[in-house]
Length: 112
View 1 (tube, rainbow, N blue to C red):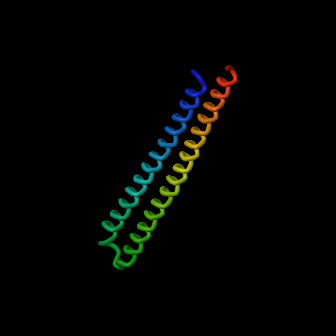
View 2: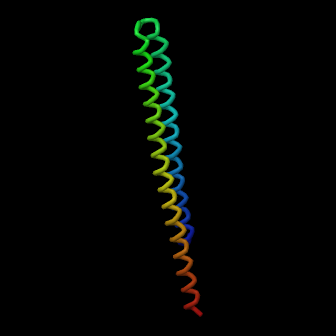
View 3: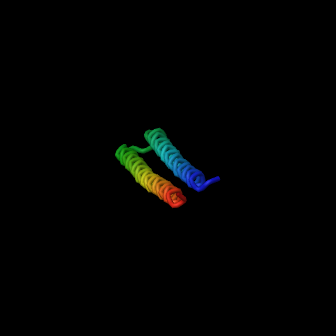
């Protein structure tokens, strides 16, 4: 295996890891949202008959909505960070390939 193939294999492996990390973040985000929605539904369902002050239930549901927003924001932040890491990985990969090509070209020219 030549250097260019090794660089490409390493690049693809790292990119796949970032993509898997991004998929995991999306899965965790979706699971967190489902859990919060389930809590909101159960809170409303179970407490509506037992809590005379409906304002308490409304406040609890609003707090859960804010938590959902925080989950979305955290996931979006993590996604942007991964996108930036992928961009840096891409730049590094293309720079390494370009340097390697330049070195090979210089070597061929010096052989003549």
